Image (cartoon, rainbow over all chains, first blue to last red; front, side, top):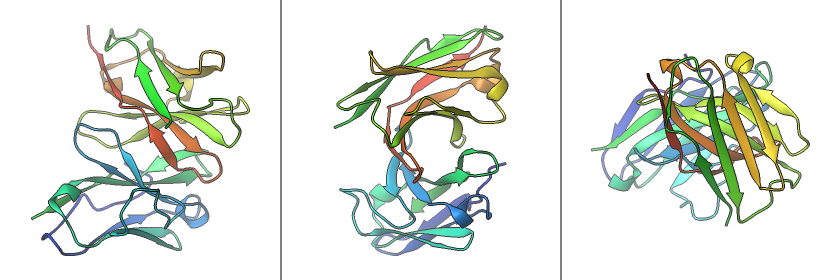
Length: 110
Length: 120
């Protein structure tokens, strides 16, 4: 059971938009920055979004992040087949005093 | 470009100690503002944070693993290490070493990961 809650899977057609939600509490998302990671099967996760809505260099602006209260959302527009991957949200939890993740969301581009 | 590389045995017997080392290249391991973390991922499952070493030398461990984990750093070799005692099959996972940005808590550089299997 993950501390942060994500839907197990989402899907959309190429070119469409998809959002992935991440729900937490006041001990984590509510008072801390949220980051998002993309993991293509067989490879290490890659930082996609940090500080709720900032993109590292090299990440296209098709990827966006937002946070409201104790929830965060990852948005991906102009879906491509190469976006098929598992996506994880993460943050710090002040009760556990450690990093916590969502269970991951598998994105399928139909 | 910072690079992290995990090394250690790929097979550990039950009840023994899992030992992994992460070598950092292309940057400093002792700069302030960073922490050095271990994260694992059991086959087919999600990410689990194991623990963290801050640049000031403090350690933070996942409460569920705290009784079995020790992390340490050797700044002269630019390495940090993980020891997980009394392993069982449930500890079989890909283990990643990662750099975390202190206070903002995002994980910006990841090692490629190393699969550790616990089996007799």
